[in-house]
Length: 107
Image 1: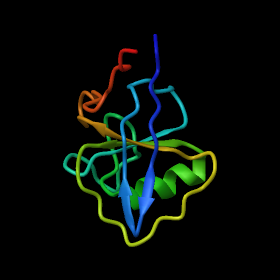
Image 2: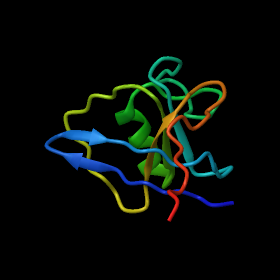
Image 3: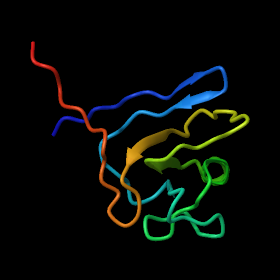
């Protein structure tokens, strides 16, 4: 299996999130879904958090990665921490299918 890892780009206060294949670990993960989540939830696939800020704060405290459903997330500021990654472009609850998966280009 070939994994495709893409990058988070921060430009002038805008956070551009690119997809990562659906290769979730069983630990160290926080799920954020703007439509189906709640900031009172634990951040699991079944009970995602709603806001990027709340999800990222939880991820930092547990050294987890953040997985975002496809939505527009507005943040005033976000201090990125080494060891905590953000992956976006998923369908969200309940399936968490990667919507932006890209295949290698032919050479």
